[in-house]
Length: 363
Image 1 (tube, rainbow, N blue to C red):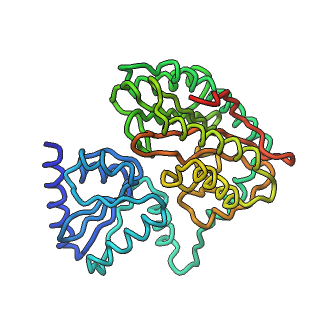
Image 2 (image 1 turned 90 degrees about the horizontal axis):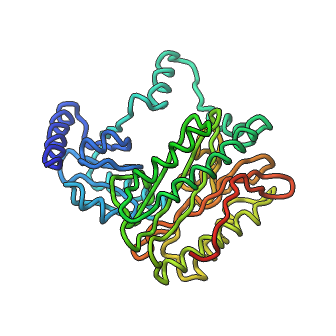
Image 3 (image 1 turned 120 degrees about the horizontal axis):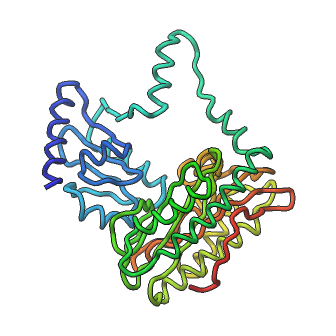
């Protein structure tokens, strides 16, 4: 029923597109994606041409579930952000459209940027965000102290969430335990991912019950005085199969190697290559997703963001950077979604774990 409404909305949009001379519309914000597809989804990408089928672009492990929930049948999967970009460009070219629309939401800084340029017509306006992030990537003592406190909160919050994992509990109930504990401990906000069963890379908790033999991934990101920590762990309900055991062991090895080898002057792409080789040695390379590291600070995912910003994959490790280790999951049918993330501080001696979670060497 929801799909019928969503399909009608696309029809109404196309009438407006025709009136406005727009030949194809690209949607990347979660609210409009929900409106036109009937599905709430994270990191969405939707192309609506003036005629022909709309196209959804989704992480390949999420294509099957998304296809069961939306009325749109043309869903193109990708595993790397380069594949997503290539697929979008090709799909737009195939429509023959020369006038494109992009849904810039009211709360996006891009809109304010355009307004600022219009207010100062005739003046040269430069994007200084890269300049600011060059500063923000290296933390001072004040920032580090807040991230240390957020890390302590994360450890306790994930303990509460893990204790709530049981047959019949919902992902939302598990997330609620982490949220409640974090707020009681002084967090000013917390973002929680929970995934059970089918693999999802963007695992916002749902009203879905945990079942026997599920892989359950929990990722908590509390902030203290505006500064975040990021901590994730994975458990199995029941006895894990051999592929799940292998994936768990490979991910834990990659996490440990990542922390051990993060050194001043290292380029993140070089260590990323070692992560890939670990997965390859375990026969899991097809499940590999690029982006094992990213920055942590005033956002739980900030520069250097190696998953989606290709140019930042060559970022050099600097003293007093705070990084996440273990961001990109191992996911796939028969495995579920497996992540073990830690927040680390880069010192002259190497990486120091700010999140100090003890993990079993085997599930």
